[in-house]
Amino acid sequence: MSLVSVSPETPAGEAPTAAPSSRAHLRHRFPLTFYIVRRVLAGVVTVLIASAVIFAAITLLPGNVVQIILGRNANPQSVSAIENQLNQGHPAWDRYVHFMGNLFSGHLGYSTAGLVEGQKTSVESIIGPAFAHSAVLAVATLVLFIPMVIVLGLAAGLKAGSVRDTTISVTSLAISSLPEFLVGTLLIVLFFDRLRLLPPVSSVPPGTSPLSNVNILVLPVLTLLLVSLAFGSRVLRACVAEIVSQDYVVLAGIHGYSQRRIVFRYVLPNALPPTVQLIAQQLQYLIGGLVVVESVFAYPGIGTALVNAISVHDVQVVMVVSILLAAFYVMINVVADVVAILLDPRVRTTIS
Image 1 (tube, one colour):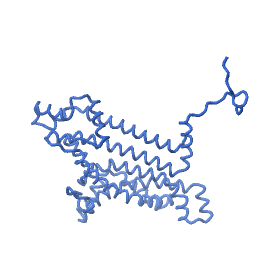
Image 2 (tube, rainbow, N blue to C red):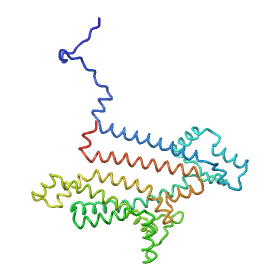
Image 3 (cartoon, rainbow, N blue to C red):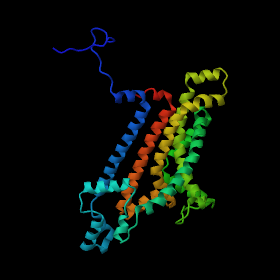
Image 4 (cartoon, rainbow, N blue to C red):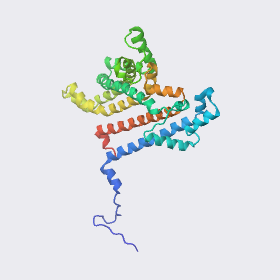
């Protein structure tokens, strides 16, 4: 016969409950920390899955990449020698593990097209300047995007249904319906062909910075800005219009609060979390938008580098760039979710 000891604090007739585990206790005590760690781990797993899918998709492409690049110069001896340099004789899983190990160690490998031509051109030397050029374009767009989208969203949302709101909404809807390459082409026709003010090609000489000639950035930044503002202003306008219709905002107006005070005390603080998500969406859009815009203006960014690598079947560059862009996309989601929770106490209380 077994005996069960009951503590004096346990009421008669009730079974004693097990003490919570240390992990559950820490999770209950530090819910935000656990949420951030969980989101970061989920992001890492997502990147690994994306990298595996990208590697498998490129590996399973029909045809022999070495023979395609060599063309008429392909012969069994040269093809076999280059395949040995590329570890083509190893199983796909071993090549993936080797590739990811080098990627995490900071060694991005050598250009496939370069190896075929007998040159050891590192991927870093190809995509490093391209990423730097694209970063300049993206930062310039964001610096203008954030204040402009707030101004347009407030201007339309505070006067929902007015002529001002209708004008901004219709204009933004019309612009957002146009693809980037068409917006860029129209800007070239206007500012170069008609007005002769800006160059149609945004070329950057090797070893120089795009900031050495700011004129070449105007049309690409303006193209990205117009398309992103059209979407962003509509999203923020809807958010502001919903906040303005809330009872506490209406009561603030009845009690004589000025519109400036209402905006800075009630509207903007409540619009910050959606604004963070909006900026994150803009950054994610830039990943795809840069490829198109850089191609239109021949800007030597990461989009152009990716297109060039695809055209010459440079598998290593395509894989590295695709995985880095996927990692950047996932990182934006994770950071945006965490920042939005930090800014909104209502959401923090729901985390368990």
